Amino acid sequence: VRKGETIAVAQAISLVEKNGEGKEELLDMLFPYSSEALLLGITGPPGSGKSSIVDRLIALERTRGHRVGVLAVDPSSPFTGGALLGDRVRMQRHAGDPGVFIRSMATRGYLGGVSPATSDAAKICAAAGYDTVIIETIGVGQSEVEVVELADIILLVLVPGAGDEVQIMKAGIMEIGDYLVVNKCDREGAERLKTEIEYVLRLGNAERDAGVLLTSAKTGEGIDELHERISDRVKSMKESGNLDARRAARLKMELRKILHQKLHEMLESHLEIDDRIDAWIDMLVQGKSVPYRLIQSKIEEFKEGVR
Ligand SMILES: Nc1nc2c(ncn2[C@@H]2O[C@H](COP(=O)(O)OP(=O)(O)O)[C@@H](O)[C@H]2O)c(=O)[nH]1
Ligand SMILES: [Mg+2]
Image 1 (cartoon, rainbow, N blue to C red):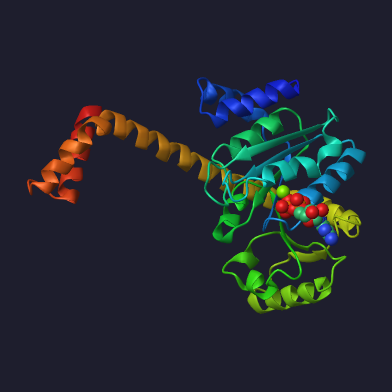
Image 2 (image 1 turned 90 degrees about the vertical axis):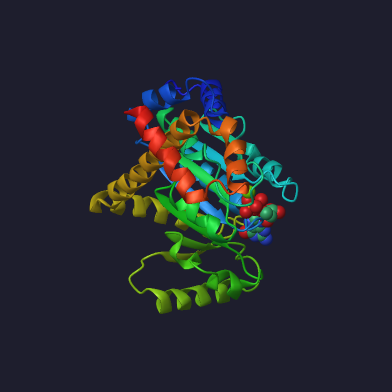
C-alpha cells in the first residue's frame, strides 16, 4: 500500500470492507501516513453530474502532477443499481492512468449515506500516496451530513429544474458544503437557481463563506474556477488552522465510534446475548421481569465479570 501499488490498495480496501482478519493492524500501521492527502467530498442528488465533475477535476489534478483516488459510494439498491456503472463510465478515460485509482463502494442497500468502510478506504488511499482523495456520495435528505464527517472540503451539487426551491430549503442542506455547485449551467434556470441559493444563504447565515458556483461538466465551463477555489480554500484552511481543527473533530468522532463498537461487541459476547436473549424474552412474556430492570441486572453481571 505504501508503495502505491494499485492491487495492494484494492486488496486493503476489500479487507476493510469485509471486516477481514488483520484489518485493525493494517489500519493502525497505515494511520501515521494517512493525513497527507486532501479529502474532497462531493455530494448531491443522483444525476446532478457529480461523477462528471469528478472526471474533470481528476484531469485538472493530473495536470498538476497530483495522484488522485476516487471512492464512489453508491447505495446498492435495486432502484439505483445502474449508478455504480455510471460512475465508472463517467470517469472511464482515466481508467488506464496509473496515477488514478477509482473504486466503487456499496452501502449495502440503504439509500444515501456512506459505507462504514469509506473513511478507512480514504485513509488507505492517503497512505498509498494519493494527493487528493475524492469521495462521491449520493445526497438523499439527511445523508449528506455523513459525508461531512468524512472530508476536509465538501461540494454540494445541485441542478436547475429539479424542484429547486424544495431542494434548497430542505432542512439542513444549506449547512452542508463549503461550496454549492449549480451544475448543468448550460441549461436554462441555472443563473436563477444560483440567485435563489444566494438569497437563502444570506437569509440563513451571513457569516458562512461558502460560495455558489456555476459549472457545466458537459462544456467544462466553470470547472477551472471551481478547481482553483478548492485549492485556495485548502490553502486558507491550512493557514488558519481550520483544516487541523476539522481533522481533529473527525478523529474525535472516529475514536468514539471505535470505542462504542468495541464496547458493544464486548458486552454482547460477554453476556452471550445471542444464546440467551430468547430466554430473556420468555422472562418478560411470563411477567418474571421488566425490560430496564432485566438489562440493568445483566449489565451488573457484566461489570462483575470484567472486574
Ligand atoms: N447538460 C448537462 N448534462 C450533464 C452535465 N453534467 C453531467 N451531465 C449529464 O447528467 C447525467 C448524470 O451525470 P453523472 O455525472 O453520472 O451524475 P451523478 O449521478 O451525480 O454522478 C449524465 O448523462 C451526464 O452526461 C452538465 O453540466 N450539463
Ligand atoms: Mg455518480
